Length: 209
Image 1: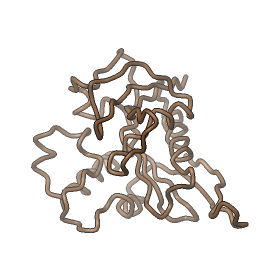
Image 2 (image 1 turned 90 degrees about the horizontal axis):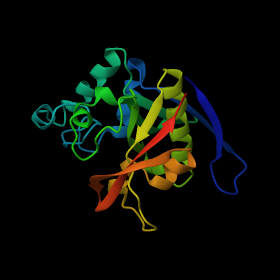
Image 3 (image 1 turned 30 degrees about the horizontal axis):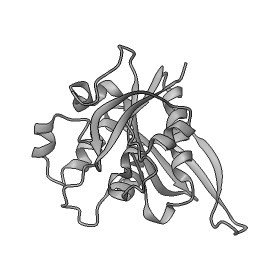
Image 4 (image 1 turned 45 degrees about the vertical axis):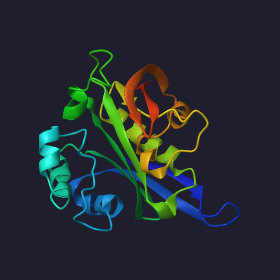
């Protein structure tokens, strides 16, 4: 899958970004590492595993072990999400894959499934600091939607926070906001009892049929 778009390097600059989105296949895992890796490789970064694997396994993995655990999804032939590139440089990440592949979601009491449709889930969006504030989150999400549709997903779900007009800390921005997903055509289905940064999260859906 390849989603191309053009975004400005500077608001008044003549040069344009070259923007692409690709699945996080094994051959692109070094690019994903460039986006998700913390400054200290031993730090207990999430590596988009907290929803995917059982809590006991997640807690048992050291920070240095977690990248290899995420890579296993790509090695098994199911990319765990998509990578955004700007001028060929890895710039952003969106975790998008079948909800059934997320152990924590499958057993969640705070974000329960609303029906039996085999939905796909967006659980995380990350943009490297140097590429923020250019509207890239919208294009990254658009690439994730296109990828899920290309893989036959009937419905795409997300669980963003509702900022209610307040500024959101970057530490909690990984969920995305209700406004971001509404702009992409998602609809609010039910409020959840899950929170992030003290803000309520909604279960939102976009039909891909």
